[in-house]
Length: 203
Figure 1 (cartoon, helix red, strand yellow):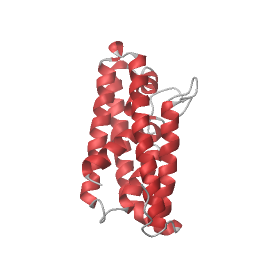
Figure 2 (cartoon, one colour):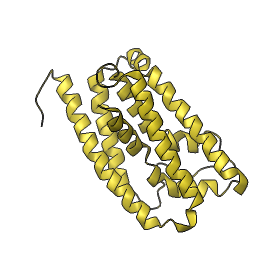
Figure 3 (cartoon, helix red, strand yellow):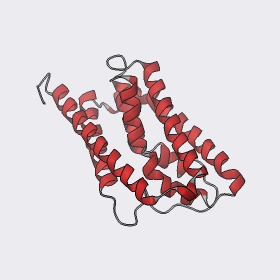
Figure 4 (tube, rainbow, N blue to C red):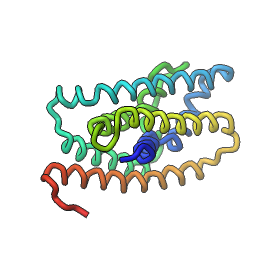
């Protein structure tokens, strides 16, 4: 997997377009002059969390006794479920979670789980477990940084242009990204099964 492919996968999992409506609601509770500062702070915390999971990924897998093929299959299933929720969201449901506490957020819920959610952490661990085979460590770090920069830039732009954002456009983009993520998840699932069965041909 190349850097661009890994970055695109992480971008899809982070789902910034799908999270924008909920983020705008959360940010409205913060004083106007603190909104961008608050979001950038939370975004940096999320980036730090993802980097930690990158370097601790192999240790966590070894500690839990999880094989790479099992992680690949599990990752494919999780991403498939996320894609389903992106394409067919429940009525009144937020992008990833529901009600949140009032006041200026700190770590929860913007950094975790809005930006660096369980799915993003699991994806980083999955990619980290493949380091040395498909991605080098520095390449994965670059992919994480690239996905984070694009996601953060989109959300900052949304904060600046919130009056001009049409909800229907965001919904359409999120569902399109959900379709792409679904195909990625199926391929990841097939790769995990092929690895588990020692070179079984699946196409």
